[in-house]
Length: 188
Image (cartoon, one colour):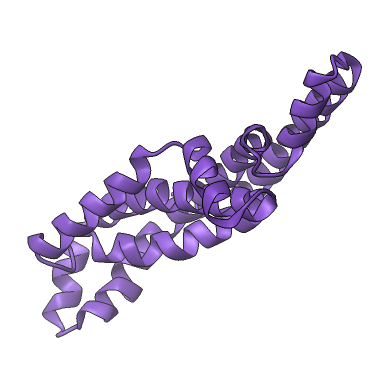
């Protein structure tokens, strides 16, 4: 659920972020996109889980959609702000040679923001791993479903085992994320 939700959210957030940056578009469009992103981001992932369960029914699909929606709002806002912060001299230089908006997006914004994009994507994946455990409490599948079942049966040894397993998984994810950052992110 966490991986699929993160990837779906990322794929939706990236175009919204490009549409929501003042570097490429004028205020009416940017303002509308930022309001939409703010609306999506306002609703916490657990409430998105409830909405998704109502729409698609119980199970991991609901959890995946909930995580994807929350991820979309979160990443679109952060990416749009990162795109707005691209060095104006670089933008001026690329505009000076007659670049179209898609050239600016590809060769200036994407290139300058790539490290930040990857870093925030990895953070969101870590967050979604933890959030997916909670989504089962609202019927959105995942480990939370088992946590709820074991808690209702007062089977605390299994609850402890699940929590320790989740903790170990989060630590492994953190280690992999750190390794990926060291390996692939450029250092200045």
